[in-house]
Length: 111
Image 1 (cartoon, rainbow, N blue to C red):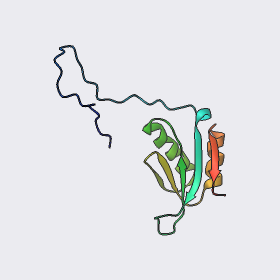
Image 2: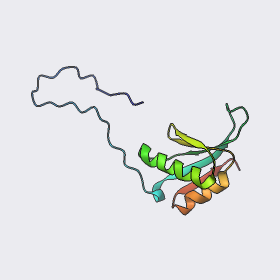
Image 3: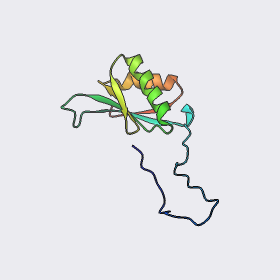
């Protein structure tokens, strides 16, 4: 949930003033410019392994699309939360290969 940023403006006497509460539109970087980190996480998950993909810079819709692509190729469940893709299980190698095939720069952490 995004909060509106009003920068402290409450009232303006300028009749042509228009308040734009929208933040800058973030464009998704090309895959060659993305530096993604793929790693395994077991903390606060009752010992169950989850593969995380961090470092995506771009729109939420593009991140959701990439997460869906990874989930279907791996055949497992997962989600996209807080600019991270979570995939159930240890799929570091497979996910990194899929991302490299799509043109992303990938670094595997924890091997």
